[in-house]
Amino acid sequence: MNLNINVNRSEEHIQIELAGEIDAYTAPKLREELMPLAEEGKPVMIVSLKDVSYMDSTGLGAFVGLLKAVRKNEGDLKLVNLSARLERLFNITGLSDIIDISSKSEGGVR
Image (cartoon, rainbow, N blue to C red; front, side, top):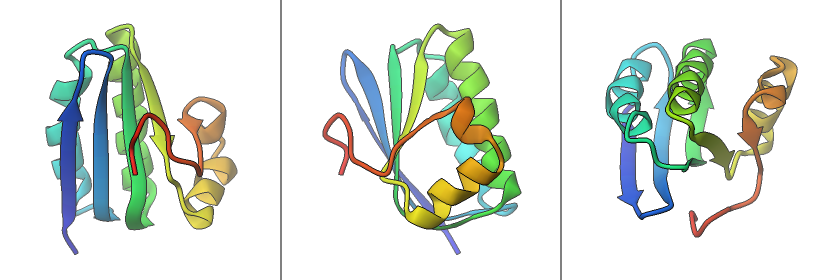
């Protein structure tokens, strides 16, 4: 399966909409696209997972790396529009304690 990445920038934040699957095959594309954005130093990066149908541990690792890069540049990472399944995955792994996640939309991200 493919992973589609749509990026919208504003002065205050970067909004990213992901669609597809995040796994061992697509996580490198996710890192390649999002890491340079994390280094831009915007205060907030908001990532919508509304249309993400599947994520494995490789995807979780990509978000941990992204979080580190965003914080290194004094920013914040928010994951929004998580399905119940993805929210459970972040809760079970304890990542919801270090990454700001929400099942609701935020900042105009659908």
